[in-house]
Image (cartoon, rainbow, N blue to C red; front, top):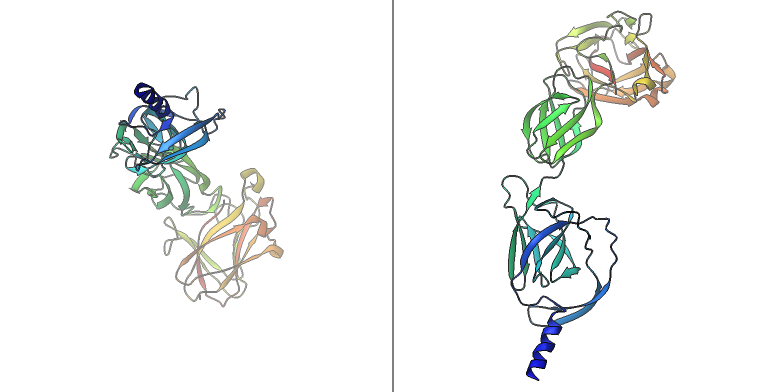
Length: 377
């Protein structure tokens, strides 16, 4: 009878999750999140620290068989199967000290399915330890948390001169090894997990920004710079006083190489309006290049404007493209500061070609306005 009783106990214990025994980890396997393995029902009995038993009927663990691979490293957010012995009474799983989520329904005495936390430390200073704690002890396993790919959320300003600083914000930017504008490397000024400051390399008019870390390379969805420029440290060839068209009317005087109050780069346009309705007029006339909005993928006009002498915050300018005054856009300026202006081309009636830029004042005479980097994005 004693022998029969012992045999009976052993038989029952084979179905108990959380039996006595120090836990061990023999391997870790990757698991596909899209696993569709069939689930078979089984009865599981668990015993808590007070000796109370609970019996439940659950589906089998979502084991991906055959396993994708045995691994000793992984990235946050992915599923992994820990394989070993005496794992049934697991109370906690940690990666580099950060607690991982697991579903108790997917625990067996030889397997635990966990999600590696996205907050688990990575990089050269990590402890590299996967720990499984049960009611009867803790098992440690050498496991490296791999840095996930970086994410670019935004960058500012969206256009500026060579040598100026652009701030890139994002996620997992730790230990950035390279930032490029197109294929041209940029100098990294500072680097944190969520922010990069870089210097714009020379020769960049319009380019995507890429960031490379130990986790991989990501490319910005938005484009830095302009797809076409009318003015940037000088008029583009063929525009205004640089080979084509006119430069203004109604008593307005200009300086296209002005070095006072440049917005970006070294120069800006200094315009002294001669009276009400006087204007900066760049373009209009022979010799202008043909700029196709659709061919270049232009979506908006972008420029920066500064209120100088005799201007007041709140003064207005009327912006017109291609002489279409029926679709003029009114903007306000700030005295003593630059304001970045971006206007969708739809506001101007979606011109098929760009042949003229006009900034007309409604204010008193002798008002000075500085305009910088006129272009299209």
